[in-house]
Image (tube, rainbow, N blue to C red):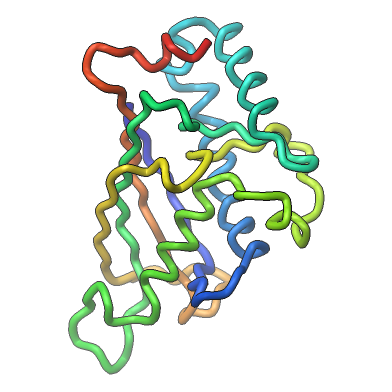
Length: 194
């Protein structure tokens, strides 16, 4: 199964620092997209809406942290394979004629922020500065239970030619993330959700 997630906004590098509040702000941009996927994708309802809702309840019980009920599309079940292909657009620099993967700032730190935002927080300490979920964030949908479940990564960069409203250009980014979730040959992952 394939889906695309988009992001436009501030994308800070972790830079070796813990930035749980910023990571959660990015995570909040992916939540409504993933919620929409859960409720509108034919694959998610192939076994029926009742079955999908049972799966969501099961995941919220398994992935509860403080007052958050996380619903990862891919959890720690061994049959899931998850790959991401990221196109990261960043603003052009005045002193660079070419834009390369390493030309602007700390791309590995920005990617780390994206991977953390695609995942549920690893522990309750990461939720201390965040507060309670909004009403439409119960449950809270995320891509993976842990970013170690992403088994393949591809990254391309390019010039961001459209400014992100309200964001300082040096910290702005746009990302298109194509996600592939698959199961080993002969297994239908959605049929193994129970």
